[in-house]
Length: 408
Image (cartoon, rainbow, N blue to C red; front, top):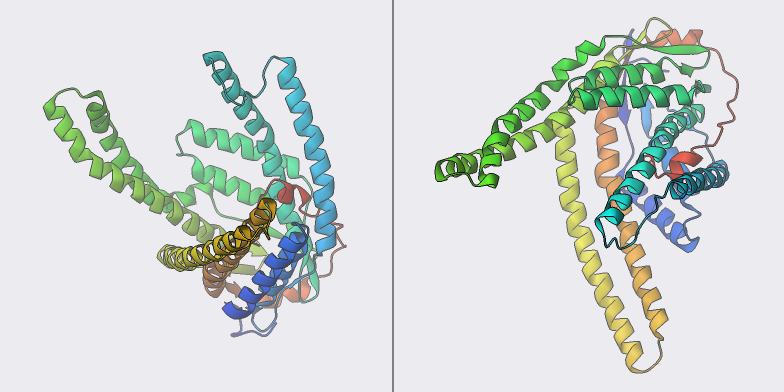
């Protein structure tokens, strides 16, 4: 690692839009042609591109995962999930609960809601399990300076902690959200390794309350406006209705402020937690992403993607409809073939949308975060030694089967 100073290294992201867009389009087309099977190789290729675009003082991390191990892990996870969910449905049916497609009575409506929520809560532990295992796989398949990262196995320990902290957060109406954020991140960080050296998450969970201030302001505005809005809904007198209508803008401001507050919390809690991580004792980190910058990337990305995809949909379906109408009038195209043509155009536009999301949202956000990262005392890496190869367990199979994880 080449140091920019005697004690710190600054990171930067060098990936370009053009190569990533071409890669994403090719990946999408191959995924369509293989009926979705290629998506495991597609995600692997995108990760290799992004990992190699991160410059840490002249050196770059390397992603060593393969599409084949992800595909095999997915097959295993699907079998396990099918058996598990099948047993859940058998138990529900045994107790007289089953899903009703078109409920006609109040009992059937209650039954439908009960089955939905029981199934949801039955899957929630698996979603948390998949998130932990996904992070573990990413760590195991990342190398830097030839040294492998790694993560310990106890995913179920993370699951029950996440469920317990989540319940506390709900019961306290979000007041203990910093406690949940801190302790879950500490659980993951303290079980993460670079070579034979363990990461340590320092700090205190109460230190995250500074990041909550905008959430509290938004919640306070909603709390003030809610009673007045309840009056207008109950239609209790002209004076009350006038006050309630006046409170509606306050409620809208409160809602948007709370939404901004949540994004602010995510960004600033990340900053705090990063600043209190350490490795090899002396090695420290700092990341300073800005909430406004990230919101700006999302808004601009949504506008660009919406415009391009809107035009693409109009053109694609216009051409498809004209082709089907022309062929249909001569009897050259059966109805089923027309449906296939429309489906292919639709999938093509979705592929375009996915590529644009990668290029105009995912990569710029990642580039902004990486660009604010500084590593202090990088010379401590000289003490790190190689760790044993990790087989990778299910290779994110559960994450893929449950659709857990983002674009990369």
